[in-house]
Amino acid sequence: MTTPLERETQIAVDLARRAGAIVLRYRSPDLAVSHKAHDEPVTRADREANELIVAGLHAAFPDDAILSEESAAVGEWQTAARTWMVDPLDGTRDYVRGLPGFAVMIGLCVDGEPVLGVVYQPLGEVLYRATRAHGAFLEERGATRQLHVSATRDPRGCRLVSSASHRMATIDQVRAVLGIDDEISLGSVGLKLGLIARAERDLYVNPEGFCKLWDSCAPSVILTEAGGHLTNLHGRPLDHRAAEVRHVGGLLASNGLVHDAVVAAIAPLFPRST
Image (cartoon, rainbow, N blue to C red; front, side, top):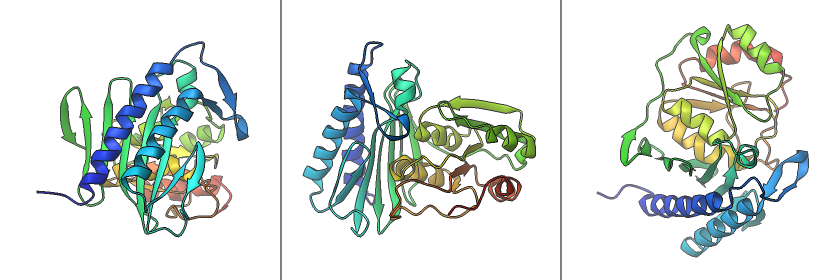
């Protein structure tokens, strides 16, 4: 039986795997790195993976808009009925440091709402995929399983995953007000939300406001289809048609069960910016 967006999912998965092969091919301590705004690194791997994905999506879906981190937008993405959002190499800092926390991310918004997400970690060939109302799945080591978040209900028992490259001092305040002792750090936003979706972590807090629409689109579908929740730091829904591509209100991802309690506890720590 064909499920909605099956063709889109197949193409996105194929492009993510092919882009991941490019990313691994260039992985080297000698890789040249340049920098964009906010000192964000960019490499030849980012650009070539981006070219492959954008060209592939445009060829398969010529009427769709495309918003990607590494190239100009294709079409009027804010008003288009369908917009692909692409991060060809999420977690570039981990990538250039020789760490494993990087991934390829491809998401699709329909009428401004994320409905399809693919996050692929080339190291280990770990693939997360989800479509709205049809569940989230993990493909790893030749097996596929459906994802479900943890059953943790008390914020004090939460296992936190934080940013490896942009950890702010306010994360210590978050831990203090919530009573959290367990924290790990990782580069890619998609992989962090993947850990929550697979019940290995319970909470992610990013107060810095530098994450972009292409950082959240694909993993948001995976997380929500696994039972989790993603908002800004004050519990407001993310706007994937916003004129500002940055999530200036930060990101808060959880297993859903602790979300309201976490918002109530940490919102006073942060100015209401959106």
